Length: 404
Image 1 (cartoon, one colour):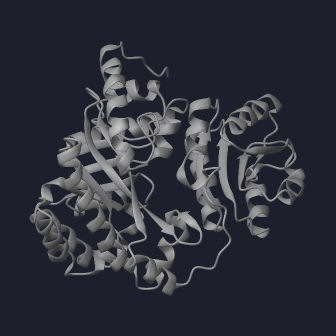
Image 2 (cartoon, rainbow, N blue to C red):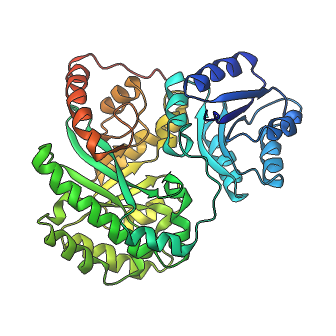
C-alpha cells in the first residue's frame, strides 16, 4: 500500500484547520495540525511534504516560523495563508524564498475549498506523484534527453468571451526508467547549471511541434502552442534560426508558436536578450511575459521587450476574490495590457466566480484548473468533448460578480 503524503497545518483557527483537513483528506493527504507556532517541532517530526502556515498567529507569528523552517532546512512545500493584504502575503512569500524555502503558493482568507483543492492538485503537490529520493546526475539527464524519455503534458488556454479553445501550454516531464514521472523541479535546475538547458529546450520544442501538427489533424486544433523559453536560450544568438528551421521541418508555421518568458528569467545581458527576442518576433513567433507582476522589472520588460501577450501571475488571480489589493492589481494589469495592444491571459482560474469576474473585467484569455489541469496529449480529445458542453453553459449563464 502506498503511504499517503502528509500535510501539516499550522493555524490558530481551529474551525479553519478542520475545514482544510477535510479538503486535504479528499485530495489524498493525511494531516497533522497545530494551533501554536511553538508546536512547529512536533509538526516537522512528522516529515510533512506540505506545510500550510498562517502568518498571523498569537505567541509566534508566521514570519518567525518561516525563519525557523529555514533554520531546520525544511525541504517540503510551503503554502502561506493569511487574512491580511496580498502585499503582506507576497512579503512573506518573498521572505521564505530568499531563505531557500519552496513556496507552493499563497491563499487569502476566507479560503475557498476550490482554491485549496486546486493548489493541492498542482503537479508538484500531487499525492500520487512518486516520492523519490534520488541523486540524478548530469549524465543521467543527458541520457534521458537522448533516449527520448522527456514527455509533455498540455494545459488548455481558452477565450473568456465564449470559452473557445485557443491554445495550450506545453509542460515538460521526465519519464524516468527507474523513478517514474518526474516534474521540472527535479531536473530543470540541473539542466540549466550543467549545460543541458539548450538540448532540453530543443527536445521539448521538437516534441511539442510534432504533437501540435498531430492535434491539427486529429482534434481540429488551430490555436497557439505555448512553450517556456529557458533563460539559456536567451543567450544563444543562433536560437531564432535553429527554432525556425525546426518549425519549417515539421510543416508548422512560427505564427502558431508562443514562447513564454518568465520575468525573472530575462538574463542580465539585456542587449543579447533583446537581440534574440526581437529576431524571434521578426520571424513570426509570438512572445508572452509570464508571471507578470512577480519580478522587480515588470514594467521595464514591457517597455523594452517585444511581447504579444501578458500573463497575470496566478497568485494575484487566486487572491482577487477576497483581497482588494490583488483585485486592483489584476484589473490594472488587464487595463495596461489592453492599452499596450497585448493579449491578456489570467493564470490560476480555479472556479466559476473567477471566470465570470475576469470576463467582465475585460480579460481575454484564461488558464487554470477550472478549465483543466495539465494532461497527456492522449487525454485532450476527451477533455475537448467535455469542455464543449461546459463552455456553452458558461457562455449562456448570467455573469456573477466577485463582491468588493
